[in-house]
Image (cartoon, rainbow, N blue to C red; front, side, top):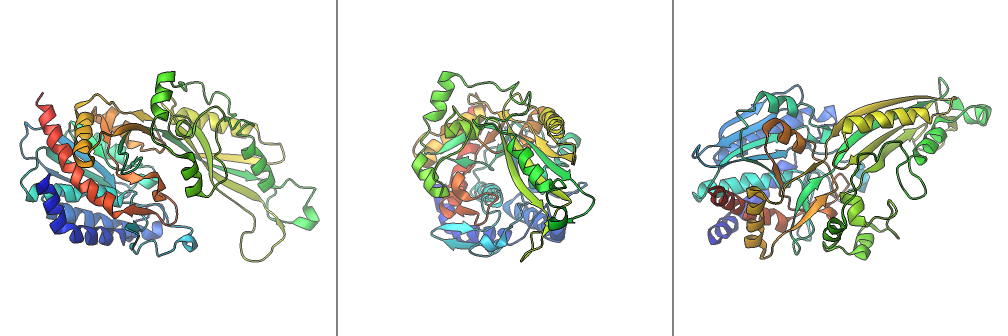
Length: 457
């Protein structure tokens, strides 16, 4: 441990400056205008992997953005860790809500504010620096492979193709992923499950053009009003999703599982204060921790219709649109949920409008084992680094490729994130604590050490 701390202390400023350089790339995969920046980010990641000591570093082309691959095989008889991360980021909109520019990292109160600071640049780059540390101190205990992609924020459409075409190349004993969070640095945790995702877009069309709201209002159905009513009907008075068959395959937690989940430290008043809300909201009969980790949800991610520019324009819009995401729990299938959503949404449309439903990306829910060698190695690493054992938790987010790795490569993942739920992922003023960044670099080499030791049996 002293050797690890010493190397970090000697290089901490450089580690921070390199992360800032990475964060300055506006690698927004969802917007084609950032294409050159996304490609430059891949080049940067590849260069840093080489500098850290990786071999066979390659920028692997796909039908979309490239995947950066690198490896260090020190002994084929030793276990191999496949490290996954993503260098693309969410759009920074709305820009006016950022206190400082989203692609100019700024430190306030020991926290780095920038788009991608936590999701996932700061977190995957911990692995690059931890790998460098192990290489420079001659303490690398496992073979390591890196696979850093550029399309996670748009559904990883080409990752499955790459994985299935490179099964031998990606052969490993475990996938290590830092794209999740901990309860807090005082209460370290490891996520043992993730929800799946079905992402939909809906369009409601009325008249063949925008109309004068005075001439036609009251005589022609307003698509914006109809869409709002349709969306509102998707939850009942208990905030239970009303789509037929939606819950058919959902398994309720046992009493013991509920007790274990709700024993995690959680302060509801602090939660409400942080979000500036007067009360929590959700499915009746479930706690906040149950709602965010073990129950399926349906949320509107965005809506638009008619005139939304400055000033006034009195129109009855021709159409209205919304983007809707559904988080799924074990046994639910993203394809099946997308199908029943489509069928239901069309069925509730009144005759005076036309409805189009488009399924975008999806992913399957996963539960990772807590009795595996890799999980025990992560436990021991956290115990050494934090001085206390981690609490197993369920994550509310989705990482669709976890299920892909299990089905294609036949290996489980360890979700070893160092972010916090309060880091404003996908929101303005995303942040990542400098302390968490260094703590990750300190803890990850211990995982490799213990994974190699425990794998010997």
